[in-house]
Image (cartoon, rainbow, N blue to C red):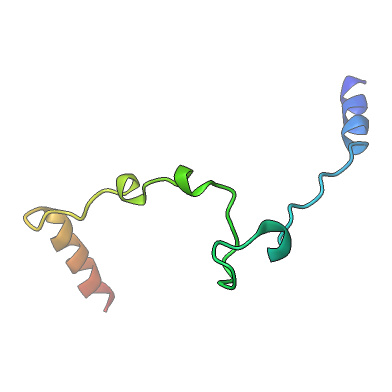
Length: 74
């Protein structure tokens, strides 16, 4: 019975409106650029260089394995 009541009540919820997508409402990064502002403040953007590891060292097996796979797929 509780499950049926839960289903009925969730069906009665009002849907959330879609977020705005027009440049007039959201704003542009630079006027006339066509690039809309994101949801993060520019100061809160993650450092992408800190997220990704550096390239493999030439002496490691990784470059040779990558080259071997590239040669195999040719």
